[in-house]
Length: 234
Length: 234
DNA sequence: GGAATAGTGTCTCTCAGACACTATGAC
DNA sequence: GTCATAGTGTCTGAGAGACACTATTCC
Image (cartoon, rainbow over all chains, first blue to last red; front, side):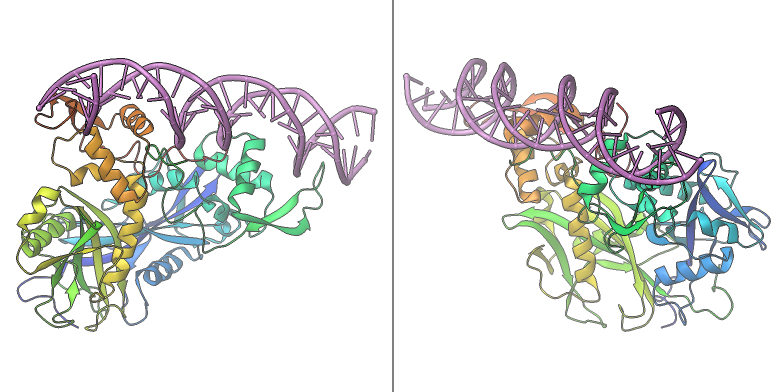
C-alpha cells in the first residue's frame, strides 16, 4: 500500500452519514456538534475517517462511524453519492463518500448526548458542504420512497398498514388514499403479513406486517421502474 | 493537507469510467489494456489517480482520465457509485469512484489505438472488480433510459425522432411503438425541434431535434418520477 | 402513379384515484 | 345499540399501447 502515484498527493477521504428519523416535525436529520477544527462547534453530519485495519469496506466504515458518533445503529444504510473537490474542506482537496441511513423512531430516544435532531426542511447552517449532501439525500429519499418500502425502516419490525401509510404520508408530505395504498402495498409484495394482530387499541384489531425481503427494497431491479417508458410493447 | 488521522493509513483512491457507445452489437463498453501491474495485460475500465493539483473535483478527474486513456471526450458523464474494500485491488484497501459516460457514435472511430469496444452483455473478464462496476452501470443505464433523454447522447447534436427511437430500442433491447414514442418525447419536453429538416434521404424529409436542456436530463427532479406512488391525492 | 419514410388520429383496455361501503373489535 | 378503526368493492377518468391512417418527398 502506501503512497499514490509519484508526485500526486492523496486527497483527504472521509465518510459522512445522513441519518434520518421521523419526528413530529416530519423527516429529520441527526446532527452532531464538531469538537475539533475545522468548523469547531458547528453542527455537522456524523462522519469520520476510514480505518483500513478494521473496516471491510466503506459501508462498514459508515456503520462504524455513525454508531460511534450517534450511539445508535440505523435500521437501513445505503450509499448516496461521493462529494469532492478543493472547496469543501479548508484543509484541502477532499473526498466525502456520503451514505444515508434510517433510524427507527423507537431508537431515536437512545441517541448519544450532544446529538441533535433537526427537521430536514429547516436545517441550521452545517459544516463543510453538508447542506448540499443533505439536499441530495432529501431528493433521493423522497423519490425512492414512492417506489420502495424504505419508509418502513422508520417503524418497528412489525407494523400495521395504517402505521405504514402514516409514515409514507409524513415522508412524502401528502395524504394518500387508503384503498389505493393497500392495493399497491399488496401487489408490490414488499410486505408480508405475520400471523399476529395488534391488541389493545380501539376499534377493529389490525393485522401485523413486516418487510418481506430486506434484500429487496425496491419494486424491481435497482432504481426506478414502471415509468413512462417512452412507448413500449404490449 | 497531508496524512489522515493519526494511525490510519489512507486507502488507494482512483476514478474509473464506464464509457458506453452504441455499436452493431448494441450497448458496448470502451476498455483499455493495462500496461502495468497489477493485472498487467488485462482489459480494464479506463481509470487513474486523482491529480489534486489540476482536477477541480472527481468529475474533472474522470473526464481527464477518460480522455487521456481513450483519446476522445464523452458527450455525457455522471457519477455512478463508489466501490471499496480490501479485496478489490491486490495492493490493498482501495476506493474507486466510478463514473459512466456516453460516447457519440461518430466519435467512436477516433478512439486511441489499444482501446477495445466490447458488447456490454458479452464482456471478457476484466481487471479488479470492474465486471461488477459494469454490471451496476448497465442496470443504471437501462433503468434511466426509460425516463430520460440519456440515449440521445449517443447521437450527433441534431437528430431525427426516427433515429432517436432507434437508439432507445437498441439501448432497451425492445421495440417501441412509433406513435407512443413520439407522444412521450413531445410531452416530456426533453427535446426541441430545430427549424431544419434532414435532406437527401428517401421518403418524406424529417424534422431535426436536439436535447432541449442539457442540464435537465430526466423527466423531473433527480431520480425516478411518475411511479406507482402508492396511492396519491387527486 | 409507386415506394419509402415522416408524422397523426383514434380505439381500447388497464389501472390509479376517489369514495362509499362492510367488518370487527370495545364499551 | 354507538364509536372507532380495519379492511373491501366499485366507479370513473386519464393515459399507454396498438394500429390504421394521412403527408411529403423521390423516382
